[in-house]
Amino acid sequence: MLPINRVIVSLVYYNSLIRDTLEYTIHRDKFDVNFYNYKKNGIVNEPLLNTPLKSFLDSNAEKGEELRKQILDYGETFYSDKSTVLRVDGDTIRVDHNQDVMIYEKTVPLHEQINAIIKIHERYAQEHNQVEEPITKLLDADEKFYRAVVLFSLLNTIMRKFNEFNKEMREAHGEKGPAASFIEQELNTLVKMFYISKANATCKSAEYTDALDLVEHLIEMMNGKRELPRGKNFNDVFAEANAKVNEFLILSEESWKLTYTPAVQEMIKDNQEARAKAEAAKAGEEKKEDK
Image (cartoon, rainbow, N blue to C red):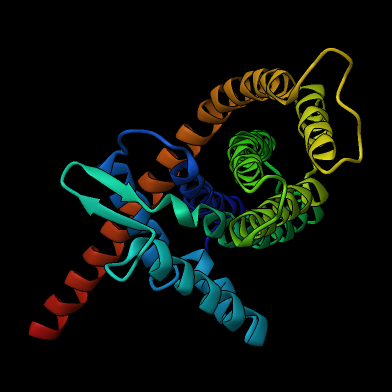
């Protein structure tokens, strides 16, 4: 049986792969194929191999089976040959940005569910006096970095969709046609994802709450629930929110790397040693049988 802290690191590793799928909502010229394959390998294989995630799914009856189906669907939707959202094209990944909203719809809830599993194990470690300081720091850094990634990606997608909506309304002379109605539905879904993340966040740092407030204020201005600041337009408000979110993202990513990298390297080392012992034991048994 794995030590509880190794289980936690393994689950954080898996959730980081889910989180990093949000990068495909960002409009850029090129995506790293090696990183895509790295994520694909982990997301697809972790639920199938002898891992803490598979162990949790196996031991939690119907709820475990429901989550397993959700995870397998996630892998098929984004990291299989059947995917219509992401596909390898030479040295880059082609993204169908018309399906950006679906990336959020599947990523945010799944990440929160796995995060809930991590918290179950964290509480177990606390109750049994098995808490290790590096793990506590890892979980704190991971929480901050995830919230930063969500804010950054959602903010940019919401603003892009808002501009598309306004363009459609202008071209239709203020009449809300099918295209504008569809974009409005997408915006509603993105806002829902924002509030799911907000509701589940445990981060209380000023860097997070300041960035969160600015993004939420922008959403409320878009919805007509809050007036624009005097002398400012939506682009001004977006620029202010984006600057604060970027600041939080840079700080949280730096802290996350400092805690995540050594924890995962140690986990990999332990796994390699355990595999070597198992293979040596198997070889020893085979020699006995030969005699």
